[in-house]
Amino acid sequence: MDNLADYKLSIDPLKSFIGWYDAASICEQNPTAMTLSTYDVKLNRPDARTVLFKGMEDGKLIFYTNYKSAKGLEIEKNNEVCLLFYWHESKRQVRIHGRAQKMSEEKSAQYFQSRDRESQLASWTSQQSQPIESKESLEKKLQETTLKFKNADIPLPMSWGGYLIDPYEFEFFVYGDYRLNDRFLFQQNNKEWAITRLQP
Image 1 (spheres, one colour):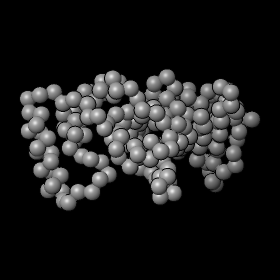
Image 2 (cartoon, rainbow, N blue to C red):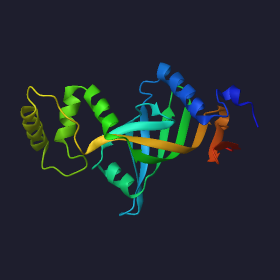
Image 3 (cartoon, one colour):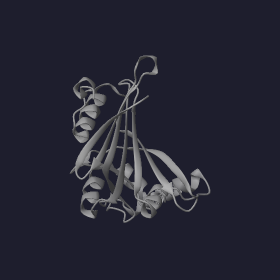
Image 4 (cartoon, helix red, strand yellow):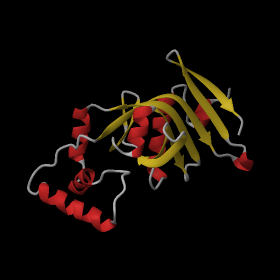
């Protein structure tokens, strides 16, 4: 096996991910952009979208969303997810497989209250992923929501909150010359991490 330190990696993939993320935060335009892939059981097909990585808690990755959105409903049926970070300037990718679980309502509320008021109002206004007649209809709903909470604190919507992703597999990818890319797979086995170098 190669010297992992040459790739800014260690035998602990969580520490390796944090190191790569911190480095990306210096040079990338949006290092928090994270592709979240889920599986739609009803339609028997995968789904993907970009969400924002919001840090870690006890080794689990965090993002927030509407629980009634397409991704929320898909996670409810199948909590196996895949995350992908692509950092163009860093010439790196990280792919993470894990299982999603809802964050506690208390911690979701703490984060919700830290958001700007416009974002809070939008979370109350939008029934994410559901059809709507027009942009004007959505703007009217926002006006109604704004009036409803005029001069009042905005509470956490019951349909909104955080997810914790408990990772069990990481793949670290470094772009190389002549497409000889470096790939290192970390797989969890009985609380230990097995490391395998993969061909490009």
